[in-house]
Length: 254
Image (cartoon, rainbow, N blue to C red; front, side, top):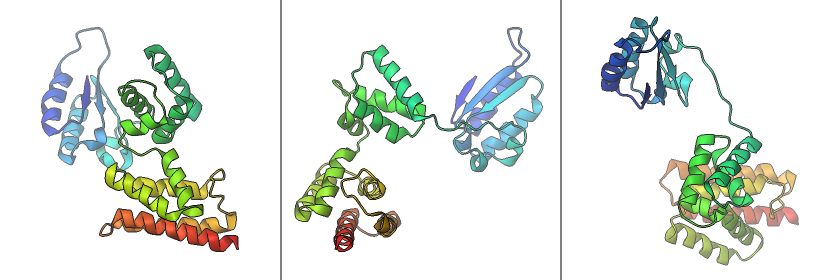
């Protein structure tokens, strides 16, 4: 039996009823799998605890959770063996995505696969869902299609704007950022995260000197924090951040 997002009614009714039923085949026990168990309410978890105690000889429970230490109550944790699964390595994720794309007849570029890896970071389910969403748009699955399917702006495009703002025409870059946020609905927080990656990257066109990176990262963190706190325009935070990075690098190059 597989249960997803069970509330107390689900636990008391379906899970308990299933646990009470005797196996119809020759099996030593029945198996109940609860997906996203850390999303259950404390009351539902207490009810589950009692069921686990009552049917310990005839039922085995598998609880799948994203944040088990903080999301699962201690009495349940003490009755379980904990198995932690690390994110999958990059090559394993990309290899599986290529296999799926080949079987499904989906044409996907290497840049799109790299974008999916950057988004999923080893979460295979998220990677497959992202590929499926991008493929549903029709046509070739490229980097642009991946980010369009997720409602996000392409990092390649943002990187070009960042480079323009820092070492090129700042006014032109500001107008492009304005268009991204106001017209295309880009999230200022996503833009700030891409700026952070560009600042610390060794392959970025910004070529931030190593001795300036700590200061640049601190500047990024200030604007990130202000945006998370709210009360200030995300658009203005992006403008201010780009202006400060531009000033820092120009002064550092002298």
